[in-house]
Every structure is written in C-alpha cells, then in structure tokens.
Amino acid sequence: MAIVFGDIESVSDRDIKAVGNTNYLAGPNTEILCLCYAVNDDPVQTWRPGGSPPAVYVAPAEHTFVWWNWSFDTNAHARLLVERYGFPPIPIERLSGRAWIVLHGARTALCKRQGGDRRAAPSRPRQI
Image: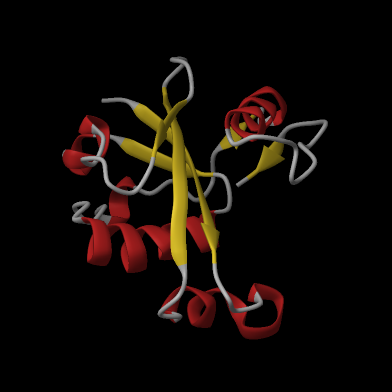
C-alpha cells in the first residue's frame, strides 16, 4: 500500500471565492489543468487531460490518498476526474483527512512543475 500525495489545478470562468468550490466545479467551463502527484517518496509526476489515469489512481482501494487541499481536491476528483476523465472513484476510507506532512518541499516542486509559484508554499508542516 502506498501513500499518494496529490494536488489538482483547474481553471474556470467562475470565481471560486464568490461561488464556493462545489459551484465552481459544477461549472460547464471548469477544466482540469493537471493533477500533480507523488507516490510515497518518489518524484512528483504530472497527469494532464488526454492521458490515461495514472496506475496508482486505477486501483485506489489499495492506497491512501492525501490531498493538498482536501476539501477542494476530493470534490474535484469526484466531479471532474471521475465524471469526465474516467478515473475510478476513491473509496472514502482511502482518503486521509488528518495526515501530518511536511509540504514545503513538495509544494515548491509542484509549483515549479506547473510553471511557477502561483501560491506560496508553507514554511512549516501543516495539518491536512
């Protein structure tokens, strides 16, 4: 069993701060830009629309998933990756909502892979 750390980046014509993440994700023009993920201590990998779901996401019952933004990313996975891109659903018992992890290095790597520092990485461990 692996621990899978993930972060979903998206774009929409809706303002997430104004409409909330559920309404944002329900927008017909909301799209996934990429899913960045790392399995255990392996390097960060990137999935983009058009590709097959990554192997670790094809058998989600075998792994534990920790999301960068648990509320948004679990919803984005269910509403967009499952419904539009054929990812299997992740069973709720495989989602970790209380994992202590050090995200500074991982977040910096994710931002660099995505083309820049859109959001500042936390400087100390953060509970998700």
